[in-house]
Length: 159
Image (tube, rainbow, N blue to C red; front, side):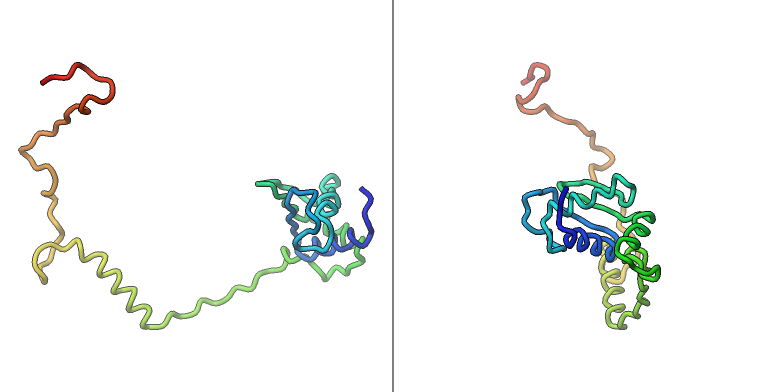
């Protein structure tokens, strides 16, 4: 598709910077939300898929393109970038050290744990032990089920 070189350049710059690109499958959308070009130009410019420079996924009316290693090399040549510059997907994430929780917060959580296990204790306060398992129907009772009061298919009703 014919499109201005400036638009294609903007799309390639954004793709190289982020390493991924998303576009809604709407060719009539006047502008792409992330790049200041028509959405149709983004969809058509990322036909780089046919050359193996991006991998394409489609889900719920959205295209997702991921830059491949060959695509990184190609865009470096097209955009005249040095090898030191890499897409955001290849940059290592900074791992933040886990901060210690305040002592008051830790005490609150132990209280919650005590409350949750308190229902298992039987008897008056201070008595130890779990609830007994003698709840339910009991030993002497027989389990039986009556009919559905005339609903559904079944045998003749008995009175």
